[in-house]
Image (cartoon, rainbow, N blue to C red; front, top):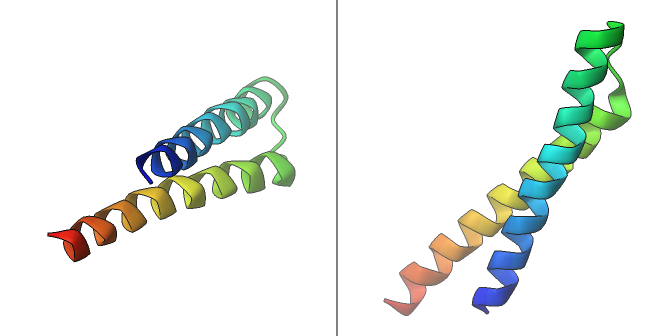
Length: 63
Protein backbone atom coordinates (compact mmCIF):
# COMPACT_ATOMS: atom_id res chain seq x y z
CA UNK A 1 0.00 0.00 0.00
CA UNK A 2 2.96 2.30 0.60
CA UNK A 3 3.77 2.19 -3.12
CA UNK A 4 0.34 3.60 -3.94
CA UNK A 5 0.79 6.52 -1.54
CA UNK A 6 4.29 7.21 -2.85
CA UNK A 7 3.12 7.05 -6.47
CA UNK A 8 0.15 9.34 -5.87
CA UNK A 9 2.35 11.77 -3.93
CA UNK A 10 4.99 11.77 -6.67
CA UNK A 11 2.36 12.25 -9.36
CA UNK A 12 0.87 15.17 -7.45
CA UNK A 13 4.24 16.86 -6.97
CA UNK A 14 5.26 16.40 -10.60
CA UNK A 15 1.91 17.64 -11.88
CA UNK A 16 2.14 20.71 -9.65
CA UNK A 17 5.69 21.43 -10.80
CA UNK A 18 4.95 21.03 -14.50
CA UNK A 19 1.65 22.88 -14.68
CA UNK A 20 2.45 25.41 -11.95
CA UNK A 21 5.83 26.20 -13.48
CA UNK A 22 4.32 26.66 -16.91
CA UNK A 23 1.57 28.83 -15.43
CA UNK A 24 4.06 31.13 -13.68
CA UNK A 25 6.40 31.19 -16.69
CA UNK A 26 3.65 32.23 -19.10
CA UNK A 27 2.20 34.68 -16.61
CA UNK A 28 5.52 36.47 -16.04
CA UNK A 29 6.69 36.51 -19.66
CA UNK A 30 3.46 37.11 -21.56
CA UNK A 31 1.11 38.45 -18.92
CA UNK A 32 -1.52 35.81 -19.62
CA UNK A 33 -3.02 33.47 -17.07
CA UNK A 34 -4.11 30.19 -18.65
CA UNK A 35 -6.98 28.39 -17.00
CA UNK A 36 -5.80 24.99 -18.25
CA UNK A 37 -2.44 25.38 -16.53
CA UNK A 38 -4.11 26.46 -13.30
CA UNK A 39 -6.52 23.53 -13.44
CA UNK A 40 -3.59 21.15 -13.95
CA UNK A 41 -1.89 22.63 -10.89
CA UNK A 42 -5.10 22.23 -8.88
CA UNK A 43 -5.39 18.56 -9.92
CA UNK A 44 -1.82 17.97 -8.76
CA UNK A 45 -2.57 19.66 -5.45
CA UNK A 46 -5.66 17.51 -4.94
CA UNK A 47 -3.64 14.34 -5.66
CA UNK A 48 -0.95 15.38 -3.20
CA UNK A 49 -3.42 16.25 -0.45
CA UNK A 50 -5.38 13.06 -1.03
CA UNK A 51 -2.24 10.94 -0.72
CA UNK A 52 -1.23 12.67 2.50
CA UNK A 53 -4.68 12.53 4.10
CA UNK A 54 -5.31 8.89 3.18
CA UNK A 55 -1.89 7.88 4.47
CA UNK A 56 -2.49 9.69 7.76
CA UNK A 57 -5.93 8.13 8.15
CA UNK A 58 -4.55 4.66 7.41
CA UNK A 59 -1.88 5.10 10.11
CA UNK A 60 -4.55 5.97 12.70
CA UNK A 61 -6.55 2.84 11.93
CA UNK A 62 -3.58 0.48 12.06
CA UNK A 63 -2.13 1.92 15.28
